[in-house]
Amino acid sequence: MAKILTDEQLLHSYQKGDAEAFNKLYSRYKKAIYHYFFRQVSVMGVADELYQDVWLRIIKSSSAFNQQSSFKTWLYKIAHNRLIDYYRSAGRQPLYLVQNNLAEDDCEADKKRETAISQTSEPDTVLQEQQISKTLLSAIDSLPEEQKEVFLLHEKSGLTLQEIAEISGNSFESTKSRLRYAVKKLRQHMNQYLAVEL
Image (tube, rainbow, N blue to C red; front, side):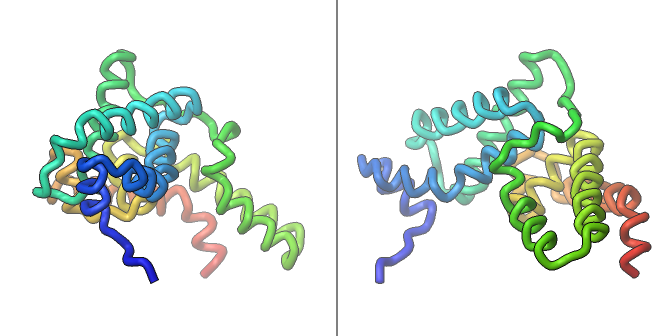
């Protein structure tokens, strides 16, 4: 059985010229990084551009990686900084668009879940599950930018609050507060559904 290398070991191998090591790192994080951008900007073309830029930056600056943080934290810090650059250059705040044009990748898990539900559930249940998903996506998109980013990094990307604080350059307490407020607002949006399930 082949030993699974850590992100840092793979990056070190890539720095020594092993292109396959980079491919493995890319495979590990490609969906997560794309989803990070898409959920922030809601426009596939912009998400694609930002996504490609991040991987180019990883290639160009791989020698600058120091092991003071994990590769995952370093990767998301580069993604976070690229997103900030995008908003500055565009001279505007994030777009909060209706989620009718979600990328197929982003909905793959939801579609599988909906298919499973539709095969075993009544039409009313399927409709309610779809409505809950749409309401949740809309609620996430309505969060203030800082809260939305912390929530997505924590829930979707699995980063710890300490890692998110490092990525965004904020204090741990500030990051923790943003997540708490985000969860509180999402619960308020979802109250109608939570009450039904109790």
